[in-house]
Image (cartoon, rainbow, N blue to C red; front, side, top):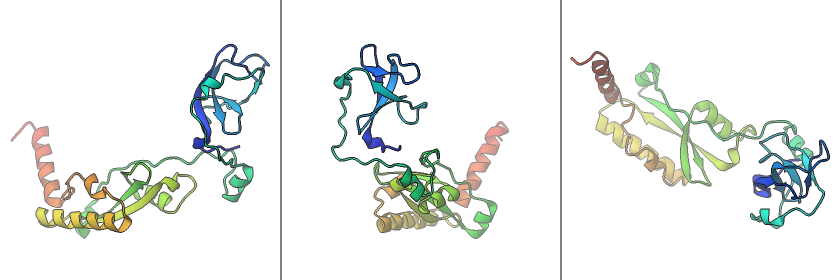
Length: 217
């Protein structure tokens, strides 16, 4: 049985006299447990802390621990739901995105631009840069990932030309992506580094690194 996170009270602790029975040995249970919206109790801090064995009440449970109220209306996703979306009950839960930092290739510099990929968290209102594979998973609404919480964004990033011109073009492209997708704050994500990866800046950085590694001139 799958419960949305909003329908679970996590990180509860059973102490002697709390009235929960261990299903394995029939003795009073002590340790971490969580409660679901339909009034059931399971071992573990949360569903991601197995084994999740259902606990039984041998006495009324101390209600003072249920300090975090659950919504009055809730839903439970059962095996039929997973079958309908092509996921078995033992399939791992959808994961959050993995960040990635771009590394333009020599081919990209010859072309003069490359693609950058981002995910906009529509709940937290923040941004994360990812690679093309991760972008495609979220943009394609793949059930392996938590695509429901993210908006996929991409843009062309200029690499060659006068540094001030590269800055202006990349800034305008970022502004346009933010406006079209209503992803407010996207431009600020770059912290004014719109000439980043520019060929001139890249060469200057390599020269400095070479001097430092060789002990100076």
